[in-house]
Length: 202
Picture (cartoon, rainbow, N blue to C red):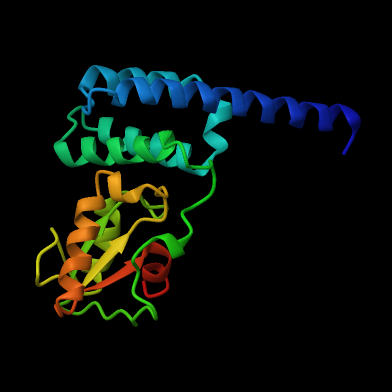
């Protein structure tokens, strides 16, 4: 690589880092009241469209993809709004390092993790996924025979998205995980697995 090319690559990386830090500040402001309205989502979409360097980060690219999908039909439903909120929470968490995922040892995952069988099994997905939107995770599982939906005592597998933070207990999906742990400890046959483990079986 020539010195000019190397300098250009370094400059692009610095620009990307600067834009990501700016994005984190914007996201924290948008999340401050605990709700994302349509105007805030549109502003974020326009800001990202003008900020190419930031999109090299995998979580930022997921956010861009979810924004594009949510805005495609001109109507943002509550599921899409919740997915965007969750992705932005992961991005802004104080203990989140961009591009890295949560170390599974901090989550109450089943150990050893069970083999997953999808036929007629009830699955619940929570968190932010590298695979795609939650609805996409549900769709591929449903195509293999699973029944996807909310967490209940009939749920066989709770799948936790790879992007999370060490303070997951205080996140928007922490209560769901803790409920599953409580049921599991009481003898209800529910398994808590990571997205990485789930992906091995699809």
